[in-house]
Length: 219
Image (cartoon, rainbow, N blue to C red):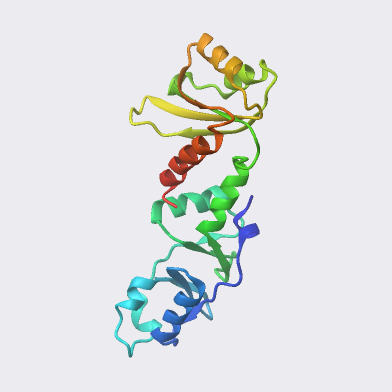
């Protein structure tokens, strides 16, 4: 799961001598709101569509260098590092470089969203249990034991922030659509069940909780 495995090479890069009209055409054609700028020495930065839209018509990209963002990620860094940068900077894409700073391509936030869906087994049938837990009591091993004691398996598990810093929310997806026995066992262990999504409510519930997760990442 290194960033280099998710590079998209079809996104064009701008050069310092390019006219702002070239950048505007790229923004329109490729439906992005940032573009990388490169030179002989490698990646020079990232320029936003807003900066180009507000630039005088006779400007070239080099005239906007003070507005470049220096955000980038190394090809060997884990995908979680890319997710963190997207969350912190609200980007649509992130340039990827090698050890010499040479531009290799970009990673799109949209593609990371698809990868998150795969991690969370969004398309697999199953049920969701939404728990509220004191952070010091959180034990994935115990949660897994409870699920497996009811002849089920955990397909994915999300830990979400809570307004109370001492608490966390945990959303567990299992391969079983009927959750009554699992819920009863959680309650017997004194877990607070915030919600559960059985067969009929599965898609609606998953969309809601996954939406919360993505909003947390600010993608």
